[in-house]
Image (cartoon, rainbow, N blue to C red):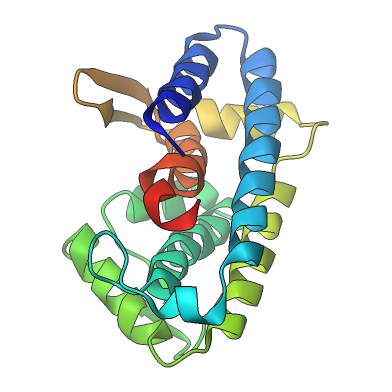
Length: 199
């Protein structure tokens, strides 16, 4: 994805955040989610086994960059499907309450880097095919949690969560409820943050 495409994507996101009517905002984000995830999965399918082994722009293998995206999406799915998602979301925003499905243990982290390192170690021995299949499944599962037909309770959850300051560009910070933020930041991961290594 080139610079212009990134700017266009962020402009679209900012426009969605600026939408006052929450139902309209939700539907616009559903549409952005669909196009973003389609492009992401298409990119994953084009990554060969050899390409997956190559060093990414930050030194990790391309496979571990994909695992990194997937790990955050796994955690967000845990929040969005929790019976007490309000409490779970507040824990996630301070990096607590991650459930490792391999060890079946709850793990807390002090920093984002600590979670990233944990995830890299967790998936370092997985083959590219395993990571790719799980990444596709995880992305589609996350997308399925945001259907076109939505209940008032679901939008209330997104909107009534604690505010979060999200610096998306050097001169632009969005102050939005953390429910919307967690949804949007997943799409940013797929679309632009790691675009140099995926597209």
